[in-house]
Amino acid sequence: MSEILVLVDHVDGSVRKTTAELLTLARRLGEPSAVFFGSQIDAARDALKHYGAERVYVLDSADLSDYLVAPKAEALAQLVEAQQPAAVLIPSNAEGKEIAGRLSIKTGSGLITDAVDVQPRDGGVTTTQSVFAGDYTVTASVTKGTPIVTVKPNAVTPEPAEGSAAERTVDVDVSDAAKTARIVERRPREATGRPELNEAAIVVAGGRGTSGDFATVEAFADALGAAVGASRAAVDAGWYPHAYQVGQTGKTVSPQLYVAAGISGAIQHRAGMQTSRTIVAINKDAESPIFELVDFGVVGDLHSVLKSATEQALARKR
Image 1 (tube, rainbow, N blue to C red):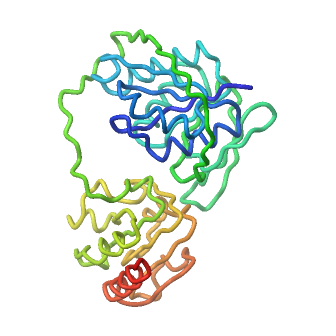
Image 2: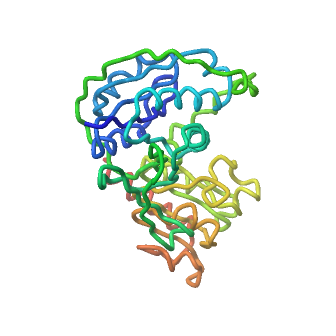
């Protein structure tokens, strides 16, 4: 069976949900092998085994951790050359896309980004993408080299399947040319207790209609165990940090449920959330463009609607 490499997305060995999704997709295509950068493999081993990784390539070196992504791309290219996998699956986040782009150049391979589905086809892989702000769905296949695919979070429901997770330590040889941008300081972002925005199954986002008051948005998100997002208008006004912006110039999300509160539905915002499975909008303007997109719409004051919805959600938990 053909080997499929999956780049592990983790924080200090805590494996993110995106990796479980990629391993699930990899099992459709062949035999999943995880590629783990870092020294915290002990914390990740059980999760990788639980989701079907047959092998785990461990790449641990100061050359990989002390610099930006160029050394990782170089090391991954060496692994691809040695193993000749049938495909490489990478999380579609900022670091993953940069690694994928560099890997594509180094291996002379085709690259597909932001896939929402990956399927086997004629001995290779075919992908599905949502493009032009979600107005079109495209299927594509790589025609040269090893298919390199970055996959959006929530593209598939993770399915457990025990693998052997046989570990192999891989020695890396990083060139001086890849070590030109050193990391001089790391500061962890303050924890909110909510899931990561681009991984969350539910996102509650606020816009201009909040008038800067995100309290009801956050309360409803917490009642649902959801992440909080914001429109560009809310971010530009200084009401919410840029790290939580959803849209073309922010983060692209594709949750099972997206709740847009006080968001007009400009094309820039729609580009970042249009592939959500179910979309609910709350807006006092019945003519707001967001209502053209949604599955369910509520015309009304977002604060009173969210307050009532929060009470109902908490009551159902009791």
